[in-house]
Length: 319
Image 1 (tube, helix red, strand yellow):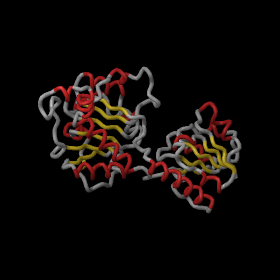
Image 2 (cartoon, one colour):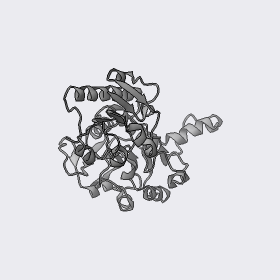
Image 3 (spheres, one colour):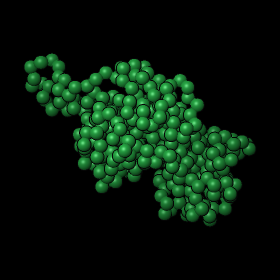
Image 4 (tube, one colour):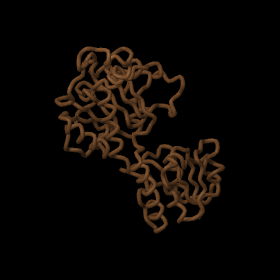
């Protein structure tokens, strides 16, 4: 059995991945892009990947592949229909990073709600030492308690965020982009109501035809000018230029992003123009990446492989 790990570094070099070696010969690559995917998988029985494209072009000359395991929940980099036609099973990992992503969501919202970047700079610049009073509140901020927290995507992460928001005294509402949500614990509203009522709007939905560009120019026009947007879902759910315009024109108060339309961030991304960290905070797609989450991810992939070799279908997405 030959295993090829295409993006070993995507889980961090501090995380032990030796569990894969009990299944057979393992070849590790730090990172893999489209141009070298086909060559690297041609002799593989099992492929372990994250973002590398796995489709007819990259798999057609890999006759032995039986299983693709993803270091991820999302599988939009895999042509699952083509894999099914080849009887290649595709397995993802679910619920391995819920606490980390929910924690990061609250972090971004709180950083922006309380203007922490301004106050941290105020102290470190020496301005606080130079004043004659004990406090400073030049940038007004408000309590979360009593505010409305809107959510798109009430899955496992969305529900965790909802419970944390409630703990701060927020009213939680949500919109189901798919229309198939079974959540009854929180108030479900239409998209227009979500936009108009949310003081904080966080995104936890998958990227689909329905969610691509969901938060666009028209959506920003309906939001409160005091609203904070947090996107920890997928970058293309938000129209980048529309977000930039909304921030520059004060249509919304602030945005916290862990995902972008292009990753890593393009040098010509219009959001690069916004340097005010009380208005925009961007982190490099690491909300999921706590040490615990990355360790769980590797363990779960090993369990998927064990299940497959035992004849099971654990987390197979293309049955």
